Image (cartoon, rainbow over the protein chains, first blue to last red):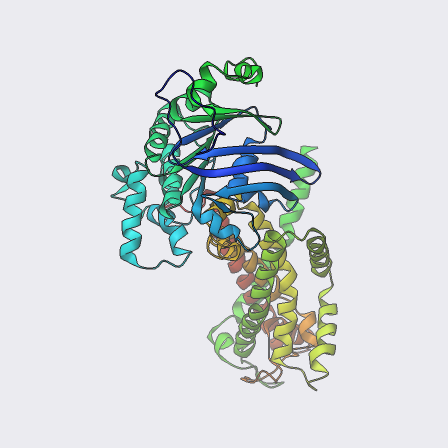
Length: 269
Length: 269
C-alpha cells in the first residue's frame, strides 16, 4: 500500500500489511515548551499487533495516548502534524475526542475496573453511558466481550459480583473486555501485563495474539520477550523520535540501526 | 514527656465527659414524653415541652440542606474536576475564609439580605443562614474526597468515549459517595447546634408554624431563652434540651464513624 514499510528481506513468512489502520505524518507532541514526540511518521497495519518499545521517557506512551487523544487531558499538550485513522484525520476541527475514543479503545498498565460496578456492569458501562439500554443487546455484548477476553468461563456464574473481587490478572482481562464491548476498531495497550505474574502475563499475551483476528492492536511494552513473542511489527522509539520500524523478526534479528540493536540486546535502556 | 502528653490527651476528653455528666444529671430527669410532644407552657405554669423546637431544628436543617448540599457538592466537583488553576485557588481560599467567619456574622448578613427586605424574622431566613454556612464546609470535604478517587478511573471512563460530565456523575461521584455523605453529615452536625445566626433570622417561636414567612422555634434558641430565664422549671428544661441536642449531634457523629470505618476498602460484599 505504501512504501513506508521496509520490504521484507530474506524471510518470506513475514506478514505484509494489506491495510493501514493508523498513519502518522510528522507527528509532534509538546507539553508546554518541551517536545515529547518529534516528527514521527509511521503506518500501522490493520489486524496486526504492533509493539512500541524504547527506554522510559522515549515518548512511546505519549504516542499511544495521541492515537485516542487522551494526551489532551493535559491542558498544556499541543500537537503538530497529522494522524489518520483509516484515512480520517482525527485532529481535524469538528472531530470530537469522545467519538475517536469510542473507535480507539485503551487498556492501561494498572488494571482499573470501576469499584462501584459489578463484573457485568464494568463490561457494559461504555455502552450504557453512551445510551444503549436494550437488555438483550447488553447481555449479548457482555458475553461476546468476556469470551473475547478469555474471561467468560471464569466469571459466567457470578456476573453480578463486584469487579474488585477478581484477581489481578482477571481484573486486567475484565478491563480488556470493557474496552472491547464498545467495539472499537483499534485497541491500545499501555504495558498491560507489567503488573502481573508470569502466568497471568502468558494469558494476556495469548489473548493479544487472538485479538488481531478482529482488531488492530498497538502495545507499549518494556518486555523485549513480550514484543518478540506477541507482535508482528515493532517500532523502536528513543528520545521522542522513531528510530526504527519494521517486522518484529527483523527488528530483533537484523536491526538496521546500531541503537536498536543495543536496546533489543539489552546493552542499554 | 509521655506523661505530659497523656495529661494533655486527658484534658481533651475531660470537658466532654464533664459536660455530658452534668447534662445527664441535671437534664435527664426532665426528658420525658411531654418534653417531646408538648408546646412550651406560658410563664408561671409548670410542665410543657420543646416539641416545636425539636421539629423546628429538623425543619431548619432540611431547609439548609436544600441549599448547602447541592451547591456545596457541585462547587466541590468544579474545584476538583475542572482545571481552572487560578479560579480554583480563589474558590478554595474563599471557602477557607468563610469556614472561619464567626457564625454571628452570618446571622447579620442574612438579617440584612432577607429579614429586613421581608420585614420580619422567618423560617426561610433561618434555613438560608444555616445553608450558607454549610456550603464552604461541604465544598471543601467534597473536593478532598474527590481527589482521593484514583485518576485511573477517570482515564478509563474517558478512554471508553464517555463524556466528562457523565464520567463525573456516574463513575467519580459514586466512587466517592461515602466520603461525600460523611462530609454532609459533619456539616449537619456542625450547624445543628448553631444559635447565634438564628437569633437574627429564625428568631424562635413559642408555637407551631407551617409558614416559611414566620419565625420558627429551634432547640438551640429555646435552650438559650430558657437558660437565661429566672424560672427553675424552664432552666431544668434548658438542661434537658441541651442533652437532647448533644445526643442528636453525637448520633450524627457516630453515623459518620460507622460510614468511614471501611472507607478505603471501597465496596465489599
